[in-house]
Length: 553
Image 1 (cartoon, rainbow, N blue to C red):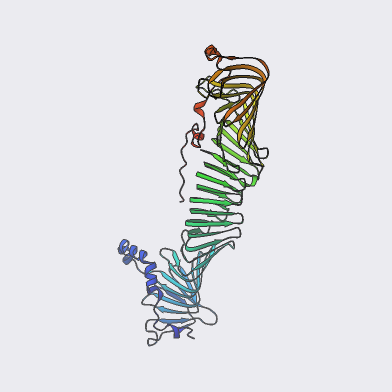
Image 2 (spheres, helix red, strand yellow):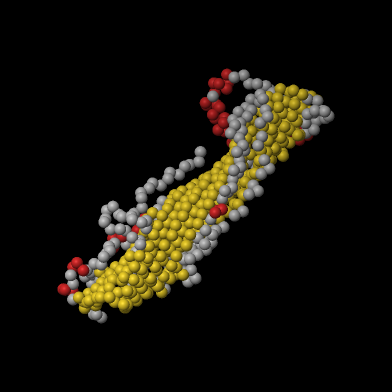
């Protein structure tokens, strides 16, 4: 009738070993030093043998234990302080208030926890449990499989350190080398080589806290989340496996098929294909070859849309020279090679020796046209001048009611320039005695190798031009009106200046040129606004504070 006696005579129990002492050291110290009086004042409850088919007590073979064995009908049944244990055979050490259970062992704690194993030790005084051999820990939402498990009933914590596998609702499976279960919180803390697998993604982490009721995973340390179309990395974060969303901080990054998002914090909802990022954001679009930066962004992948603000900047490195577009907020929409970029409030553009500013910029990738637009009738409160869209190219200032820059998508360079209504070009004379000026209704310009080469001023063209010889000596000042003016530029200077259908005009000696005639109507020189660097793009932005990143609770 005795099933396991030949293997157990003189065996040392695991609950008396160093393994147990190491795991429960903190618990024991707290119990001894913090609750010493309370513990020894209480009466310890005894383990009860509720049922056994066979009972044997042999002081020669087993001086400290009674042997309990099942019969054909029922297992041995044991109870203690709210738990019921069943098994095929048990050794009961009555004086020590201690049980060893063998064969199809089950320990049930109410209807919330069920522990199954081949072997189990239970101490009725300390309420410590050790289970080994095909261990399964069941609670309403999950099942844990491992080979050895320690369970502290007082703290309601279980621990394993010989690899384990958790299955939750047939969707989430978690593997780890070590793990702790906190029964009151319904939470697992998995450590070392953690691998959470679902039908939609895998999570690999060093430390992962998993709540079995909600499916939320909190992780710390280097963590990778792999989905069918994305790779997520962070060092602190959480993921909700039930609702398919997560929040990631500390070196967080999402790598989609079309772009990579970096930020101090990132929220991601896979079910809606939505992501938002906060502080120090970098979004690298590897298909369209752009890098977008700022301090707050929202990405709607399903509709190919992105919104970014707070020091927003998009850098296009597809062309030979990088083009920077800035606005206090930027919206990007459209698929590959069909994107539209809209930069609002303090729109600015910078590319090599070309820069410009306006209220807003509209760039269509399909047409290659960037429009610089100002709101109508907007007058700067500090000036009586209307601030029109403006471009600077080398030494020339170009303004108009609206400005279009056309990029050649095939050659990836600036192709042409169009200024509509009230076109005006200003350039300082080489000796800075005055200003060369040309105005007209419209301006058309052509570029060669990214440099402005030819300019046509069309309709109602007026000009003031300082004429100099090859020695750079002033010959006179030309002031005239004509139907059209054509200019050819080389080496960043005007090479030829041709007036077509001239109406009137005269070349004045410098001393005969009236001061009142030196500026054409609408003259407004804005040298102090020239954009020379990336930092200059942000000079007029509204002040803001970085958002405080919320830590995980």
